[in-house]
Length: 266
Image 1 (cartoon, helix red, strand yellow):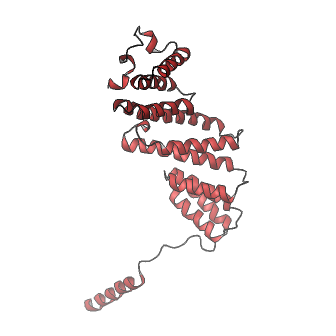
Image 2 (cartoon, one colour):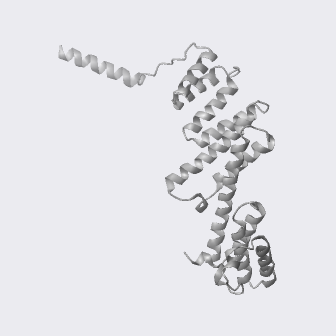
Image 3 (cartoon, helix red, strand yellow):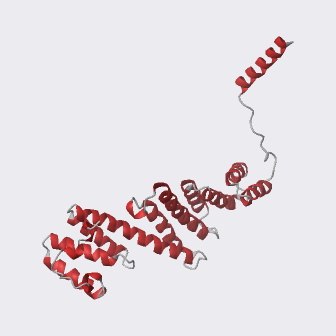
């Protein structure tokens, strides 16, 4: 009897090896596009974003021309966003924009693209314990450009205020990054490179709080390069635009270099 049981078990295991593990039952088999979309929405509502994406993918593949196609793509992008998968979210949004260039919710697509990149910035900060101004700002630029596209194409969008506030934050972070690099160049006496970074801040982010420091770096760089005329020109600009700058209110002689060499005082 035992031998017979062993033989049966061996045959069973052998069949499993031949045919592979049992596959999961497809609970959408035979369902309409509407019903699959409902199941995806139910999962989304219960925060089961992974399962929701599975349903939405089946909906897309099984009913490619369904009236639920456009919304399914947007829902899928949102589910990827909630799973903190910025790459998949952005990829899905970009496909949506390409396929549905006149969709009434196109502004939401651009907004979602921007916040996906924006959220990725926060995830990286937490993972590296490093301020965003200290590293490659590519993801900041991507987020900024997505919001810029949104406001350019849809100036009256309901997402406008939030996008504007995020852009202000991003501009300040981008300017801070440029000056972070400029400070490093000043430390290693790469004055031309420091000048270029400081000029970029003034030209690209003139409405940020970092313009004053950019001017100070330019003044010092010109001084070290012996370009006195340009140094004096920028001193006048600094005085005119920032008369209460600590550079002028602490009673320091502006002919000396030490007052602006703050990057050497770590």
